[in-house]
Length: 117
Length: 113
Image (tube, rainbow over all chains, first blue to last red; front, side, top):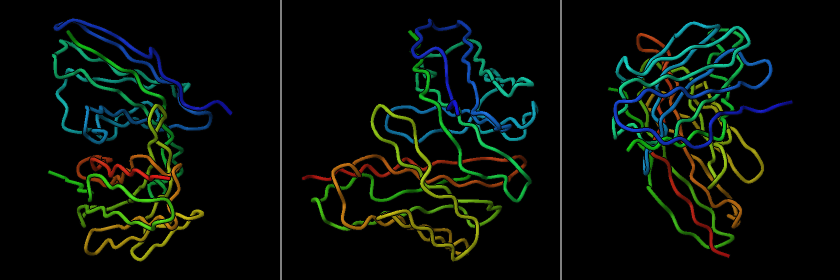
């Protein structure tokens, strides 16, 4: 069983650029969440996708957007990068059987380290 | 604004000590409370998911309790070992205009041999 994978591992961008981060969910998982983790903080929830629809969003501006594909892989896109966007970006997948089981444990990828200069 | 607080921020113990951490979370719009262990250079690993008030979960030397009415959860480690050294994160799963998972900042545990 393949775990959650993310690409790239590291990325350096300059302010104002756009970036796309990718995540491949664990087999059989149809829910994916994206998090931003800055130094010294816990992961901050960006959004969650279930069956290609966004069904939850944290306090992030619209320049953070996402996609989930039919094979349940996903992307996080960030436009107009700012210095404060420098962080570790984690994706996590989970199975979702019903709203009662909406919060099954999440399986995390290794993360993408984004540096904005 | 949903807020999840964890205490202490860090903890240094000797091998064999028992320890516990606290997670405080909103008591409304609650779906689940998660505990994760995050070792350096690895991905966060799920320990427990708890959904019902009064839930108690156990995995080896680690156990957790849940009180949804007052909004807190405790994680206990019995007989700490050096390999328990990690950051322990709790996360509140709830619904406020959409599903949200809110993590605390974590408790960093250092176990000295």
